[in-house]
Image (cartoon, rainbow, N blue to C red):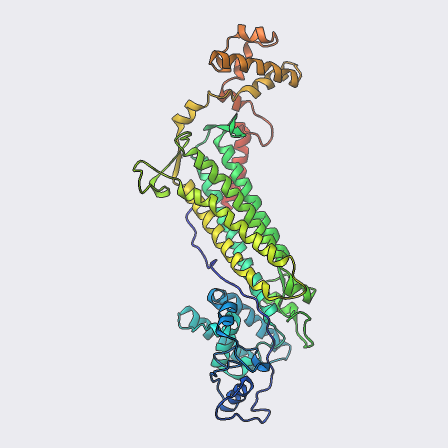
Length: 523
């Protein structure tokens, strides 16, 4: 089964939410207005643009190629400090694909509902294609005074196609637009994250396949407990990651409602078809409550929670492997591809990738706590605070995508030190519980058997030997019920072979689970 590294798709993306209002449908020229030679305020910029048949940049911003598109009622331009503080295009421009996808669906719906003509729709769609080509060719000029990806795209569209471009924002607000983009982006991120989880699971499964039958010490309280098959431990990691995958899929199902058409908060009085846009964008249905649609961030909190739980799982894997690669354990051996050295100590070989996997858990947790804190005191519906939900979303996603990739890379570049493992297994009386099971088979109550085995362990400790090395005579002195067949339960290999319950570390049971996971991961 191949576990080739998968390419990283555009998970490094950003989304932004800001309050917006739909533009009017009538140009100043149609209203019979004429512009003065030099614009004095934002409203005059609109008049000049319509009269001249082109958008012109003004010092005061407004509805022009360089300023904000909500400026009709304002007399002054926002200060440079406020503009820098409020802009998000520096990071949410990476969201352009989702934004263009939403605009294509919206334009299609507007034409079907006769809110724009089919000719205008075609012009808009062609213009959107040109915007996309410019962005992908690196020729698109992103402007901070246009605040975000939405207004940058729409402004450029109007520059390209003129009047039809002004109709695109009909029955749409940036409130529902950004929520739509965010859900589309997160939905795509979940799909890729699930692929990355499968990739990491395959790497762990391959590690298990390469070490069939290898016994390792199992620990509780970081103290020797019982012998287990290495496959059993690696399958435990696979199970944990699969719960992470299903949590993400559950989140995806709950979040797959379209906010598009909810507008600012109250919906619209225009005859729109939200079911159509939902279908075009792959949503199950439109959100049933416009107020909730633009203010809901439960799905995002749930997503970051799922990532945080997954980060906890990968951190636990990292901690185990950090210990196992240490000189004190030396159960695992790293090759040079996944280890680093010291600037002062020549002998050092450090598991830095796993230390970073462990360390980045705090970063992912921080994203979840950030969003919970942002949302805890917000009144209905949209508030500008929600602009701050994007960077935690993107950072946590990008972090976990890399964590999974690095965990798989580490797994594929480590081997297990079989001689060291075999030499370590006789220590710690790992077969003590199996001996207690032996006494149960002999008819002794388990609690009594527990006491008997405890006395046997105390004797072995005193003599400095293993339970397997105690003589039958010594066992008879502890309990006459013990017979020669006790030795078929003692020793780490016999102990492992005695496990038979469903889900246990016994060879037969582990083989069953390996077969199930092999089929699952090859699908």
